[in-house]
Length: 290
Image (cartoon, rainbow, N blue to C red; front, side, top):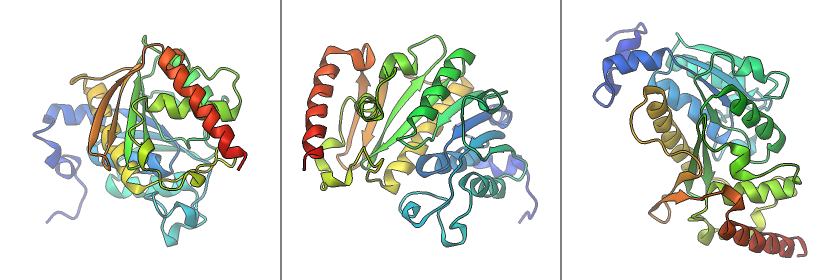
Protein backbone atom coordinates (compact mmCIF):
# COMPACT_ATOMS: atom_id res chain seq x y z
CA UNK A 1 0.00 0.00 0.00
CA UNK A 2 1.43 3.36 -1.07
CA UNK A 3 1.87 5.96 1.67
CA UNK A 4 2.84 8.79 -0.67
CA UNK A 5 0.50 10.85 -2.81
CA UNK A 6 0.57 10.14 -6.53
CA UNK A 7 -2.02 12.05 -8.55
CA UNK A 8 -2.55 9.34 -11.16
CA UNK A 9 -3.13 6.71 -8.47
CA UNK A 10 -5.35 8.92 -6.32
CA UNK A 11 -7.79 9.53 -9.16
CA UNK A 12 -7.33 6.28 -11.08
CA UNK A 13 -10.88 5.13 -10.29
CA UNK A 14 -12.23 8.09 -12.29
CA UNK A 15 -10.78 6.45 -15.39
CA UNK A 16 -13.43 4.72 -17.44
CA UNK A 17 -15.95 7.51 -17.13
CA UNK A 18 -13.19 9.86 -18.24
CA UNK A 19 -10.00 9.05 -20.11
CA UNK A 20 -6.47 9.36 -18.75
CA UNK A 21 -5.93 12.32 -21.08
CA UNK A 22 -9.10 14.00 -19.79
CA UNK A 23 -7.98 13.48 -16.20
CA UNK A 24 -4.83 15.42 -17.01
CA UNK A 25 -6.94 18.19 -18.55
CA UNK A 26 -8.95 18.47 -15.32
CA UNK A 27 -5.68 18.54 -13.37
CA UNK A 28 -4.79 21.80 -15.14
CA UNK A 29 -8.14 23.54 -14.66
CA UNK A 30 -8.88 26.28 -12.12
CA UNK A 31 -12.35 26.69 -10.60
CA UNK A 32 -13.54 29.61 -8.49
CA UNK A 33 -16.12 29.01 -5.75
CA UNK A 34 -17.58 31.85 -3.71
CA UNK A 35 -19.11 30.63 -0.45
CA UNK A 36 -17.83 27.69 1.60
CA UNK A 37 -21.04 26.91 3.46
CA UNK A 38 -23.79 24.41 2.67
CA UNK A 39 -23.15 23.92 -1.03
CA UNK A 40 -19.77 25.63 -1.50
CA UNK A 41 -17.86 23.38 0.87
CA UNK A 42 -19.18 20.15 -0.62
CA UNK A 43 -18.61 21.57 -4.14
CA UNK A 44 -14.94 22.06 -3.29
CA UNK A 45 -14.40 18.59 -1.83
CA UNK A 46 -16.33 16.90 -4.65
CA UNK A 47 -14.32 18.73 -7.32
CA UNK A 48 -11.07 17.98 -5.47
CA UNK A 49 -11.95 14.26 -5.67
CA UNK A 50 -12.68 14.70 -9.39
CA UNK A 51 -9.05 15.76 -9.70
CA UNK A 52 -9.43 19.48 -10.45
CA UNK A 53 -5.98 20.95 -9.86
CA UNK A 54 -6.54 24.55 -8.77
CA UNK A 55 -9.14 26.60 -6.92
CA UNK A 56 -9.94 30.11 -5.80
CA UNK A 57 -12.28 29.97 -2.80
CA UNK A 58 -13.91 32.81 -0.87
CA UNK A 59 -15.85 33.12 2.36
CA UNK A 60 -15.83 35.65 5.22
CA UNK A 61 -17.80 33.56 7.74
CA UNK A 62 -16.91 31.15 10.56
CA UNK A 63 -18.55 27.86 11.52
CA UNK A 64 -21.43 27.87 14.04
CA UNK A 65 -23.56 25.08 15.49
CA UNK A 66 -26.50 26.06 13.24
CA UNK A 67 -24.34 24.90 10.31
CA UNK A 68 -24.11 21.30 11.56
CA UNK A 69 -27.16 20.02 9.67
CA UNK A 70 -25.70 20.63 6.20
CA UNK A 71 -22.14 22.01 6.00
CA UNK A 72 -19.34 19.50 5.46
CA UNK A 73 -16.82 21.62 7.34
CA UNK A 74 -19.06 22.09 10.37
CA UNK A 75 -17.68 19.92 13.18
CA UNK A 76 -16.93 20.45 16.85
CA UNK A 77 -13.19 21.06 16.24
CA UNK A 78 -14.04 23.66 13.58
CA UNK A 79 -16.45 25.78 15.63
CA UNK A 80 -15.51 29.45 15.36
CA UNK A 81 -12.93 28.76 12.64
CA UNK A 82 -12.99 30.48 9.23
CA UNK A 83 -14.88 28.44 6.65
CA UNK A 84 -12.58 29.17 3.71
CA UNK A 85 -9.38 28.33 5.60
CA UNK A 86 -10.94 25.17 7.06
CA UNK A 87 -12.19 23.90 3.69
CA UNK A 88 -8.86 24.71 2.08
CA UNK A 89 -7.13 22.42 4.58
CA UNK A 90 -9.73 19.68 4.02
CA UNK A 91 -9.23 19.87 0.23
CA UNK A 92 -5.45 19.71 0.64
CA UNK A 93 -5.89 16.53 2.68
CA UNK A 94 -7.45 15.01 -0.44
CA UNK A 95 -4.87 16.40 -2.87
CA UNK A 96 -1.77 17.96 -1.28
CA UNK A 97 -0.66 19.16 -4.72
CA UNK A 98 -3.64 21.51 -5.07
CA UNK A 99 -3.00 25.11 -6.05
CA UNK A 100 -5.59 26.77 -3.83
CA UNK A 101 -5.93 30.48 -3.11
CA UNK A 102 -8.15 31.63 -0.23
CA UNK A 103 -10.06 34.92 -0.22
CA UNK A 104 -10.91 35.28 3.49
CA UNK A 105 -12.97 38.46 3.08
CA UNK A 106 -15.44 36.93 0.63
CA UNK A 107 -16.01 38.51 -2.78
CA UNK A 108 -16.69 42.14 -3.63
CA UNK A 109 -16.21 44.48 -6.58
CA UNK A 110 -12.64 45.26 -5.44
CA UNK A 111 -11.25 41.72 -5.31
CA UNK A 112 -13.24 40.10 -8.15
CA UNK A 113 -10.52 40.77 -10.78
CA UNK A 114 -8.06 38.78 -8.66
CA UNK A 115 -10.66 36.17 -7.73
CA UNK A 116 -11.40 35.45 -11.40
CA UNK A 117 -7.82 35.71 -12.67
CA UNK A 118 -6.96 32.58 -14.67
CA UNK A 119 -10.28 30.90 -13.80
CA UNK A 120 -11.90 28.43 -16.22
CA UNK A 121 -15.26 28.09 -14.46
CA UNK A 122 -17.18 29.67 -11.59
CA UNK A 123 -19.44 27.63 -9.33
CA UNK A 124 -21.82 29.59 -7.12
CA UNK A 125 -21.76 28.63 -3.44
CA UNK A 126 -22.94 31.96 -2.04
CA UNK A 127 -25.63 32.11 0.62
CA UNK A 128 -29.13 32.50 -0.84
CA UNK A 129 -29.40 35.97 0.68
CA UNK A 130 -26.02 37.31 -0.55
CA UNK A 131 -27.78 39.46 -3.11
CA UNK A 132 -25.22 42.25 -3.47
CA UNK A 133 -22.22 39.90 -3.72
CA UNK A 134 -24.03 37.66 -6.19
CA UNK A 135 -25.09 40.56 -8.41
CA UNK A 136 -21.60 42.05 -8.77
CA UNK A 137 -20.10 38.58 -9.20
CA UNK A 138 -22.30 37.69 -12.15
CA UNK A 139 -21.84 41.12 -13.73
CA UNK A 140 -18.09 40.49 -13.61
CA UNK A 141 -18.49 36.99 -15.06
CA UNK A 142 -20.45 38.41 -17.98
CA UNK A 143 -17.75 40.99 -18.72
CA UNK A 144 -14.97 38.40 -18.50
CA UNK A 145 -16.76 35.69 -20.48
CA UNK A 146 -16.33 33.02 -17.79
CA UNK A 147 -18.94 30.23 -17.65
CA UNK A 148 -20.88 29.83 -14.40
CA UNK A 149 -22.91 27.07 -12.77
CA UNK A 150 -25.35 27.48 -9.92
CA UNK A 151 -26.89 24.48 -8.17
CA UNK A 152 -29.34 25.64 -5.52
CA UNK A 153 -30.44 23.40 -2.61
CA UNK A 154 -34.23 23.36 -2.49
CA UNK A 155 -36.08 21.08 -0.12
CA UNK A 156 -34.57 17.63 -0.63
CA UNK A 157 -33.35 18.29 -4.14
CA UNK A 158 -31.59 20.83 -6.30
CA UNK A 159 -32.18 23.24 -9.16
CA UNK A 160 -29.40 23.89 -11.65
CA UNK A 161 -28.70 26.68 -14.14
CA UNK A 162 -25.69 27.37 -16.34
CA UNK A 163 -24.79 30.84 -17.57
CA UNK A 164 -22.48 30.50 -20.56
CA UNK A 165 -20.53 33.18 -22.46
CA UNK A 166 -22.52 34.73 -25.29
CA UNK A 167 -25.84 33.37 -24.01
CA UNK A 168 -28.48 34.62 -21.58
CA UNK A 169 -26.91 36.37 -18.60
CA UNK A 170 -27.81 36.12 -14.92
CA UNK A 171 -29.32 39.62 -14.97
CA UNK A 172 -31.30 38.94 -18.15
CA UNK A 173 -32.72 35.79 -16.58
CA UNK A 174 -33.48 36.94 -13.03
CA UNK A 175 -34.10 40.64 -13.73
CA UNK A 176 -32.92 41.89 -10.34
CA UNK A 177 -31.95 45.43 -11.35
CA UNK A 178 -32.41 47.82 -8.42
CA UNK A 179 -35.11 45.74 -6.71
CA UNK A 180 -35.37 45.49 -2.93
CA UNK A 181 -33.83 42.48 -1.21
CA UNK A 182 -37.31 41.03 -0.59
CA UNK A 183 -38.07 41.27 -4.29
CA UNK A 184 -34.69 39.81 -5.27
CA UNK A 185 -35.36 36.88 -2.95
CA UNK A 186 -38.67 36.13 -4.68
CA UNK A 187 -37.22 36.58 -8.15
CA UNK A 188 -34.30 34.31 -7.25
CA UNK A 189 -36.39 31.57 -5.67
CA UNK A 190 -38.95 31.34 -8.46
CA UNK A 191 -36.39 31.81 -11.21
CA UNK A 192 -34.17 29.03 -9.91
CA UNK A 193 -36.93 26.45 -10.04
CA UNK A 194 -39.78 27.22 -12.45
CA UNK A 195 -41.01 23.63 -11.99
CA UNK A 196 -41.40 24.30 -8.23
CA UNK A 197 -41.08 20.59 -7.39
CA UNK A 198 -40.20 21.36 -3.76
CA UNK A 199 -43.19 23.59 -2.98
CA UNK A 200 -45.73 20.97 -1.86
CA UNK A 201 -43.95 19.33 1.09
CA UNK A 202 -42.81 22.27 3.21
CA UNK A 203 -44.42 21.26 6.51
CA UNK A 204 -43.67 24.47 8.44
CA UNK A 205 -43.96 27.64 6.28
CA UNK A 206 -43.04 29.76 9.32
CA UNK A 207 -39.46 28.46 8.93
CA UNK A 208 -39.14 30.69 5.83
CA UNK A 209 -38.46 34.31 6.74
CA UNK A 210 -37.01 36.46 3.96
CA UNK A 211 -36.80 39.52 6.20
CA UNK A 212 -34.58 37.67 8.70
CA UNK A 213 -32.65 35.95 5.90
CA UNK A 214 -33.64 32.57 7.28
CA UNK A 215 -34.90 29.38 5.68
CA UNK A 216 -34.86 25.60 6.20
CA UNK A 217 -32.17 23.40 4.63
CA UNK A 218 -31.10 19.75 4.31
CA UNK A 219 -27.79 17.99 3.79
CA UNK A 220 -29.44 15.86 1.09
CA UNK A 221 -30.05 18.92 -1.03
CA UNK A 222 -26.47 20.15 -0.62
CA UNK A 223 -25.01 16.81 -1.64
CA UNK A 224 -27.31 16.53 -4.66
CA UNK A 225 -26.20 20.03 -5.65
CA UNK A 226 -22.56 19.00 -5.52
CA UNK A 227 -23.12 15.97 -7.72
CA UNK A 228 -25.03 17.98 -10.30
CA UNK A 229 -22.59 20.92 -10.30
CA UNK A 230 -19.50 18.70 -10.56
CA UNK A 231 -21.04 16.86 -13.50
CA UNK A 232 -21.71 20.18 -15.25
CA UNK A 233 -18.13 21.21 -14.49
CA UNK A 234 -16.82 18.02 -16.09
CA UNK A 235 -18.90 18.58 -19.24
CA UNK A 236 -18.01 22.27 -19.54
CA UNK A 237 -14.29 21.80 -18.92
CA UNK A 238 -13.94 18.73 -21.14
CA UNK A 239 -16.29 20.14 -23.79
CA UNK A 240 -18.42 17.01 -24.07
CA UNK A 241 -21.95 16.07 -23.13
CA UNK A 242 -25.09 18.20 -23.21
CA UNK A 243 -24.83 21.44 -21.27
CA UNK A 244 -28.12 23.28 -20.84
CA UNK A 245 -27.76 27.06 -20.69
CA UNK A 246 -30.26 29.51 -19.21
CA UNK A 247 -33.15 29.93 -19.84
CA UNK A 248 -33.01 26.13 -19.79
CA UNK A 249 -32.21 24.29 -16.58
CA UNK A 250 -32.85 21.27 -14.39
CA UNK A 251 -34.59 20.51 -11.13
CA UNK A 252 -34.35 17.16 -9.39
CA UNK A 253 -36.32 16.42 -6.24
CA UNK A 254 -35.40 13.22 -4.41
CA UNK A 255 -38.36 13.45 -2.02
CA UNK A 256 -40.86 13.50 -4.88
CA UNK A 257 -38.81 11.20 -7.16
CA UNK A 258 -39.08 13.74 -9.95
CA UNK A 259 -36.76 15.29 -12.51
CA UNK A 260 -37.82 18.27 -14.59
CA UNK A 261 -36.03 19.94 -17.48
CA UNK A 262 -37.07 23.55 -17.16
CA UNK A 263 -37.41 26.20 -19.85
CA UNK A 264 -38.24 29.78 -18.97
CA UNK A 265 -38.03 31.94 -22.12
CA UNK A 266 -37.40 35.53 -21.08
CA UNK A 267 -36.53 34.43 -17.54
CA UNK A 268 -38.60 36.17 -14.89
CA UNK A 269 -40.13 38.40 -17.58
CA UNK A 270 -41.99 35.40 -18.97
CA UNK A 271 -45.77 36.11 -18.74
CA UNK A 272 -46.53 32.90 -16.83
CA UNK A 273 -43.64 33.58 -14.46
CA UNK A 274 -44.89 37.12 -13.85
CA UNK A 275 -48.23 35.62 -12.82
CA UNK A 276 -46.49 33.19 -10.45
CA UNK A 277 -44.52 36.09 -8.96
CA UNK A 278 -47.73 38.04 -8.37
CA UNK A 279 -49.22 35.15 -6.37
CA UNK A 280 -45.93 34.70 -4.47
CA UNK A 281 -45.91 38.37 -3.46
CA UNK A 282 -49.45 38.10 -2.14
CA UNK A 283 -48.55 34.99 -0.15
CA UNK A 284 -45.50 36.74 1.31
CA UNK A 285 -47.58 39.75 2.29
CA UNK A 286 -50.04 37.41 4.01
CA UNK A 287 -47.25 35.78 6.01
CA UNK A 288 -45.95 39.19 7.13
CA UNK A 289 -49.36 40.08 8.59
CA UNK A 290 -49.43 37.02 10.88
